[in-house]
Length: 224
Image (cartoon, rainbow, N blue to C red; front, top):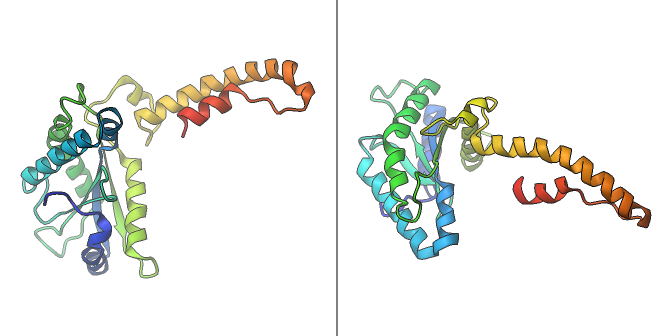
């Protein structure tokens, strides 16, 4: 594979597996942070890094994850790599959340560092690649595309990263470092906003304008 296809192009295979097995385990590697390369260095550099990452995937299939696993992307030119796990050797045995956790740990310890190195020299420090997992459950009333999409979103609740920082340790369960930073900043901005609001009320409320607080401005920038 030069580039994994979007999962929409494998829906026939995925639908068949969902129907036959009743569920489909998936592991999601979120390399969205690599998208900054395109903004800083252009699309050629971005594509260069993406192709290096896909080469790592080809080389590691059968080692860090099984050859039977379906490798797809969330969308064309996407940076969320989805591993839809194949059946166990004992094909009658279903995939369990414990199995998904084992695959997540293996991917974090071996595959993710190799994927991260593919971004050098554009990214000097090891980029943060999140790895989550979820179970897509067959529902005869719901289109498989929606079932998989919901599972991908759910995988964000089980995200782990290669290293744990003190801030990660303080985060509530299911909240990653970026979310922690946003939450902590929001707590500060709430205090700042009250001060700004009082000042603006004194200066402009008499003109009938609704004051624009610092919280409003900064939230629009950082809490998108």
